[in-house]
Image (cartoon, rainbow, N blue to C red; front, side, top):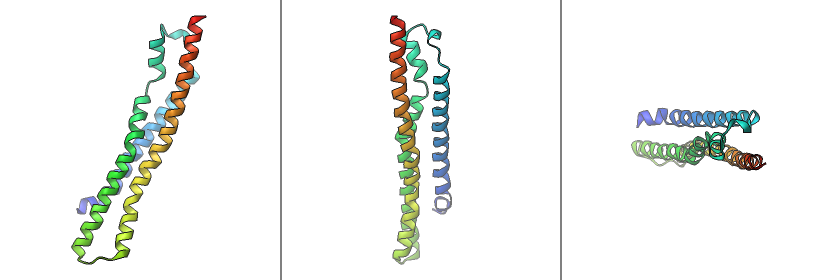
Length: 141
């Protein structure tokens, strides 16, 4: 438990930080790709759709799993708090509240990663839908 008490926040924050960085990278990459897109480079609708929807799966995985990573940090933080209270042999309301509030920061960070990623994912999905329709219209002309 000593290892968990000392390093759980660091581990969870590191994982969520990496997830946030990857999500941001995917969004920037997609936006840059959309700015230089050329419809004539693609042979058919399927090839075009595959190209414009690249990296969306990664963003989906991040926004759907970041809250769970945060929740895992919270659960472990609560476990450590109760373990330490059991070892101390006394129930002090102050230590319980402080321990629980510190544990909840992992859930908050998980949501802080997931919510902007979900917003960006939905915005990119809409842009992809519009680009796909535009490609279809251009191919029919």
